[in-house]
Amino acid sequence: MNEEELKKLWKADQTAPTIDFAAFQKSLIAWQNKLRRKAGIDIWVQSIAAGLFLIPVFFYPRLIFAFVLVVILTVWYVRELRRLSNLENSEADYAVVKYSLNAKIQTMKSYFRQTRFVMYALTPLIFHAAGYGMGWYDKPPTEPADWTSLVIKSIIFSTTLYEILTFIATEIYFKILYTPALNELKNLLRQLDADE
Image 1 (cartoon, rainbow, N blue to C red):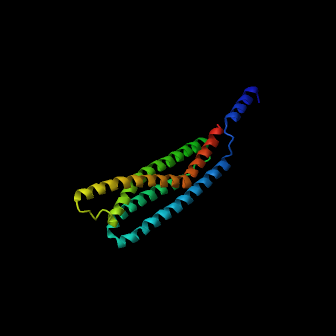
Image 2: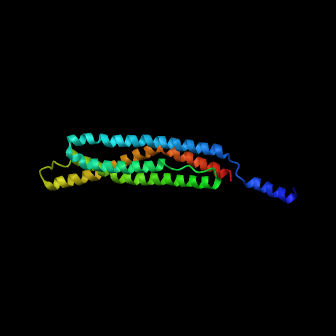
Image 3: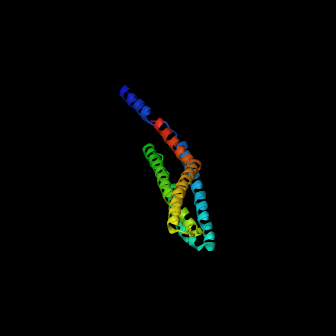
């Protein structure tokens, strides 16, 4: 073996990733299983909660509008969760794994963004529909102008309150349930980047 061949071998050895793909793949599979388990539990909880919302509809039939919105939100959310939990594992090829991790991170970020938007838009509507179903807007005072003013103020105040509560609940929910999975995925990507 001459000096040129030795230099080529040495350079090839220096640029080749030294990460143990078997261990890395095992970590990725463990991450995927945890995410699937979390998403599966979340799907069951959301579906049961939507089903339980049907009980008050029997006592207050006008709650059907709120129930329809809850079902729409639940169907959308379950579909997104199923898409998130079915992220595919990749082969033990460095470039493919890195591309796959980036795609998974972008999918999770997209899931967070879309879920926030839908929750912030639909939750106040659900609360107002529930208020209508419970009769909160039924009893006008003596003068219609006073009642209209009261309803408008109530809607503005309650919408703001519902938005704040929805924001807090959504952020806590993500922080507890799905942000650790995203951080773990970013950590796996950092391991690959550090190995370049």
